[in-house]
Image 1: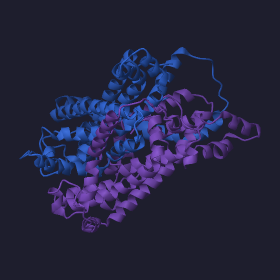
Image 2 (image 1 turned 120 degrees about the vertical axis):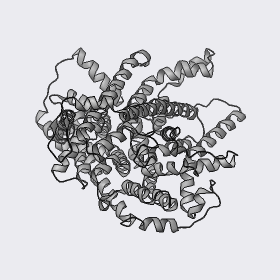
Image 3 (image 1 turned 180 degrees about the vertical axis):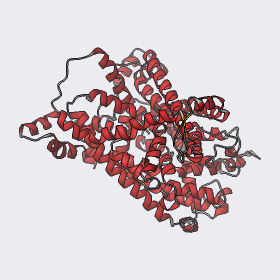
Length: 312
Length: 304
């Protein structure tokens, strides 16, 4: 079961309440669980609480934090750069993730037809998703979509003259980063492929006997049986996409430019917190991010009741 | 390594787990034309996917001005001057940053292997108070954005004087903060037959002996997957390194590349490409030799 499925089942089984469990291993468990417990408290929970408190302060590391009430939140409501960064991030998440997942699903289905050389194609499609998070690839992207970059050189050969510099144009810069995201469809593709393998062949055989077309089989068998895995991918890719940072940082040279067109939310948070050292404001921003991610994850879980189909 | 992989009982199970042994080919008769067409589409798609990478490698071996003139892979040239220039163009030779990254990766790998395997054993095999709640919390931290803890963590580590060292990046790994690997290992341990533990228990083994003598040797594939993923993530780590490593002497490879970009602007793309290729070589080697583990890990837990 996937991490997402497991979490859902723990939550639902707690409501039912089962037989009382015995705990014979309490003592040993303390030792085994000690690193995690310390980490959860010291690295996750306490910083989380501290971050919540800091959200109501003005703090720059130099002087002790000063309580300012809701000032940070008021400032966020009026901060147009922040609104813009939310818009940029939403566009990235809600254009990039569907495109990436559709590409992943289509390629996975195409590769699952018993094609010869599956392992080769799978590797080729998978490689970019392993390298895509690196600074090196972001550097490559910056060259490729520059005014005299690879893309425009190829465009020139095809007869397009005076093409713009894609990364230096506010209208297209975000598009190049979305494209980089779509290019890394290999990892969800692998998950889809694994899921496709689990669909029993007999369903297709039965459908063929009944005269169902390939297309009908795809929509009536493949997609419904794959919905748990589609759901899993959507949840995790949306969460990941909200936190994208490296590519926007490197492609824009750390500025989010041109004209804030690649100012991702996390990039703005970084600039506020770690270049301007406005740590109270950065904490408030971090909590807004957490709330946004939590809302979209909750929506995903809620909506999943209506479209995710569990075979068993 | 491959014979360990094929041990079916010990593999992760569930709908999202890959089952290489159960590949079901679909041997339907097809017309030759359609098969050729399908391969043609796949080959075109493959070339489109991989072309930028190939072009970067080829361009890194070309004189600088060619990079903005020649979009094709040919003619191949083998001019290593970009590499020589790039290697020496920062404050330290590039090997210094490679060494820093190696140290960071090594620390994180050891931390993850030790801490996550202990935690995973407890979740998979021990019955203790609060286990289900702790497990649910652990799964939730998997989805927690790092940003919500990074500011107080930074403040904490700046008070202990650890900013500009690798400790803030390595220490959390020793405290099992990478829930992804705990989950991966829990899945794996659940696949190991309990009869093995019980036989050992009857022979008088405690949980520590069972963990070290039975479970740990059997979960080598999961440990390999953890090693490979930790390696790839920390080799690429940017956000954390950018925040904590402030002076060039402590830079890791991604930070070195970033400062290369800052200082050279767009003037020396040849050298920048060359060092980018150098930085990707370890990842590519892992991809070549560790792909099975990566694919398995992905399919089980499904996070980038």
